[in-house]
Length: 93
Image: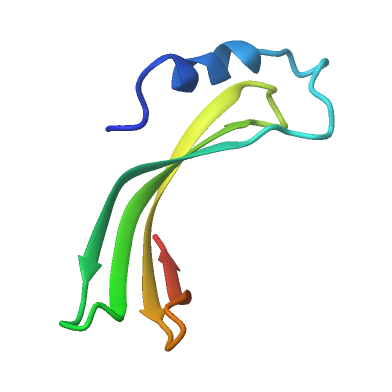
């Protein structure tokens, strides 16, 4: 999966390889947006659908071990009369 490779992605695991006893209450979470795909839905360019995968790196609070999970996301956007994009629908699966 693009976006889940390389030094920055792997560094998370080295930085957060802690034991359960040293894990503090404030967990660190890092989210990578992977393989975004934008579809313009109308001829005027006023509506768009963005689909992407979120790769979420976190530390499991019960074990203290770094974990990775992914979610599949879709967002629908509408451009208003001022030209600003507004997110009008969000789905996570």
